Image (cartoon, rainbow, N blue to C red; front, side, top):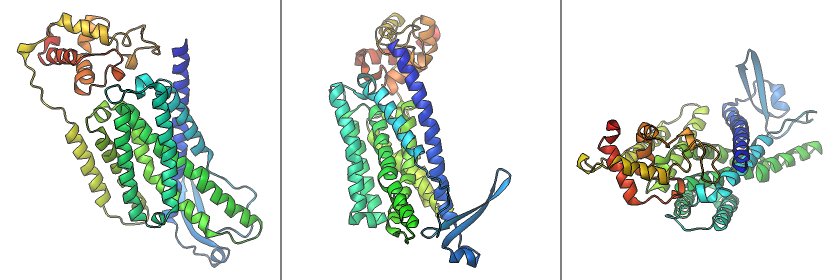
Length: 398
């Protein structure tokens, strides 16, 4: 029953996280686009009342006229819409998922004894410390003189992000390291909203309500953090989906791959932000494509030296699968915490083993991510046995 309830919590939290994440990213991307497309107002009356830019658009069968004030209107409207709960709910649901899947299930999804022999408590404590420290370091950098130099700040941030990726991959299993890299960036994003963007907007609104001219500095700081958030978005989205791609997080240089793909995502956003303002150099797109191509080449499967003469006996392979795999990959899993077979893959009969031969070889030999966290203690000799069996084409003779 516990596993069943955990599955439902996972489903509902993941659904909520996806819905609110779409809402947050959608509004964030829209306002970046809107800011970059504003044109000087054509009406003298609008200029005189403080309008700094405007934009006409058509959507859904109607025309829209958006205006942005340089500071604030002389009289605030009765209804003023804020954009914050999308960010807060996305982070809260994401952290709930992180705790449910990676902290509650630390022995399965976070800890890899071959990387570091950690207790669940130690692993969770390290994870929490890194997430909090990530925000503190970033915030201090933004408030320092470095924060006033965008190019230098970006360079330092890339170096620190690389150190973070490397460090996480030396402590946690690849899957857990990737998702925690995303958790650090996601926490920075929502903390920007909570601690900088929304308070800055509240200061501006309070000044306008008092009939004073708002201090532009909070707005400038909020704009900077908002731009940072848009560059973090695609790297975070990659880490959210990375658990589906063991070829990335299981690689010996998984931290390099993580940084390369994250940098490619950030550069794609750099191009589109620049494109919003008019003609933009294709250099960021070219670099991002080259990075992704380099990763694809690096991840390409290597030719095996195994030969058909070393073919393994199917009875031996069946024994390995039964000992190392079927505790989870069964109609009624016996391993604690698994309500159903992961991915719906069953490995209880000879026919099922043969039908899933490609997947078994890919997961146990090529990417080596199964058994997950090596919970069942598969040996190198057993992985070699599966490799020989598969490459010799024995599956076709069963």
